[in-house]
Length: 225
Image (tube, rainbow, N blue to C red; front, side, top):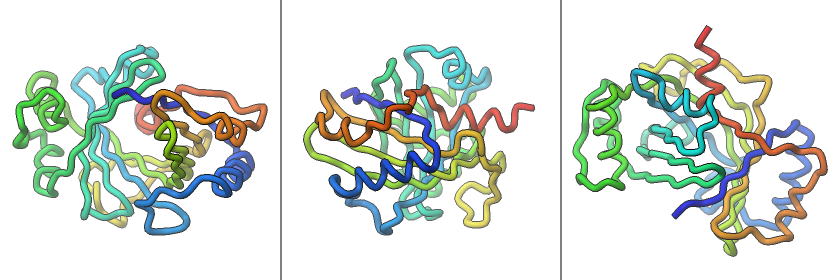
């Protein structure tokens, strides 16, 4: 199922005001272990022609992102994800993998899959075999998330967005990052078929502009010279 995903770049002040509004009405994500939220670290992959990056730069309506994601600098939960975007709608296929499988993928090796087309491991394996998929950049940030049942609504506030080209250090707590200072705060609004009207009212500041914000693109551009 595709979900709507709208993104907005915010100033620190706008994000502070919006989070106070949303936090007073919506409940935090149940998976959070810290009142401040949690950190996300993603290792993005692309093929030999940088097709994923080029699709983003060209603004193509249909495009995919391949990534491995961990949380709070821990390898206790490692997720393999393929995120498909169709205009403003997204569909994410995700599964847990082991650290050994993660290391194999980073080295350009295939892992066991189910041979099903919707299995992200199958999608990774096909891209590795046919297009030379390999890791390109690490992107990290802090996230505070709020949810609301109707519409499967999810509001996230991402801060301190930063990147690293040190692929070999993915998963290490002492990894050094470069900050994306120009656009380091972003609001994401995700829902299924509808979003409750009162949530839209809470998000209204009058001067926020919707954007095709891509953390992967910004991370790659730091190192393209």
